[in-house]
Picture 1 (cartoon, rainbow over the protein chains, first blue to last red):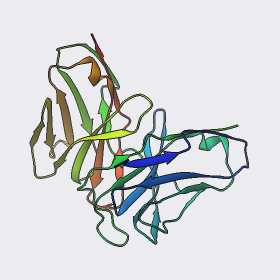
Picture 2 (picture 1 turned 30 degrees about the vertical axis):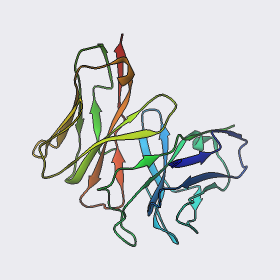
Picture 3 (picture 1 turned 60 degrees about the vertical axis):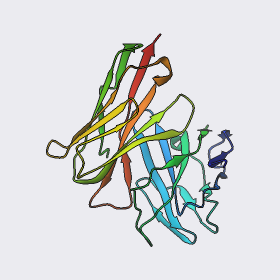
Length: 120
Length: 112
């Protein structure tokens, strides 16, 4: 199993540009999520999904969109990039969810290796 | 806002010594997890301890949980240079089933 795969590894955008960060997992995990990691801020949850067709907002959702059309994929879209979105983005998945709108964290999260995004 | 706060922010020890990191949190939790992050990589799950457990072991790792003090500690015994990494605690709050909240981490350096 490849686990959680994120692409690209690095990206530089100009302010106002849009892009999609890709995330795919091959573990048949129900739960997938996106975090951003900034110095001194730890990891903050952007959006999450408890199954195909179901998404919800996390702690810092503004400026980002997600969709979950398949179990395997959970892309993160930046609609109009801003310098404040310069960060390292991590996708994570886990085996179980508690059903619609509810995440069950009794299973560990599996992380990808991140996308380092710079917005100039 | 951050639920878990690790202490210390940075720790430097010699190989063979033990390393202890602490995590404090604010609200009642279902469980608490510890993760490791090597430089430039994603986080890797180390251990999960449920709110009704007080201590858990996994190899050289020992985790304790004191729900009355809202704190947890991670002990790495007989540390190795390969243990050099950042360590994060993450809490699953009782009142928010949709969020696993991470602290800012402890940077551990193990010198050969």
